[in-house]
Figure (tube, rainbow, N blue to C red):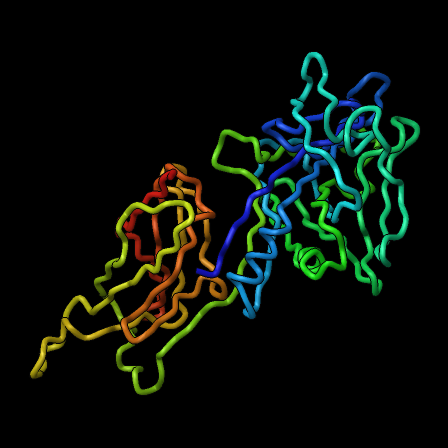
Length: 379
């Protein structure tokens, strides 16, 4: 498999209207610009999220190796409102260490033992640094003194060598609202050690934040690492691991027409979270031609076209956990047939999953969906 996911070990939201409030164990991460408060003061929210450096290095060193790779920050939408026309979300690497805290939104009494709008650590501790230069990496921050004091986190915006670190995703009224943004330029620098890893800060673009126009009030809430759903945020690595033994001499073994029969082999049905499984796909023409041979045609190894790929769906929600990708989920082959590998760590335990295979036969796209199920269990 060419997809591997790791999950954050801390995240929290910073709220300008509650500048001493920590929300380190809240089920929601929020970005917003609300203009409905007392005196019509804009309320800005940004969220922080951090992944363990050792896990990032382990994936790159011991799982991906020297293969070509990419990585996306993914966070799944809970609710969205006020996203009209086009709006950009920006992701930057955070420029200062911070504490997660144990607070929830509007706790009574208010929890202040972790990162807040005013401090990266806790109420009354040091303030967020407003900007500067660390090892040639430039960082900054932004706030509006008309509505709140200095704070709201800080972020590297330019790496040494004048490399732009801003990552952007655009949304509009009817677009998919999940955050899915390429962050490889940032992760590469964390891995090399040229940039310290304090995580990501996610916020609206500058022309949205602090906007007093009542028609510009976007709110996007995402499930946090403390959600009780199956949608925690993740850092998703992808790499090209496609291999094949198919040459011109084996071209006659590649199926190119329907109908076919297919089965998913090497599937015991139950897996533990840290396991890796190689699934095999056995395929053959449904109707064999009438020919005289000295051995059974049912012992022949057949292959799907090289453009074939796989996907994984959650059986209950029917949502793609790993979607079809012609590059990163392309099905490999060896002398025993077609195969692909799955790292179970990226799948929520105690849930059932379904494997789908997409291929092209007779110039038509065919999705093989024949109850190929398995379950990931705790333990």
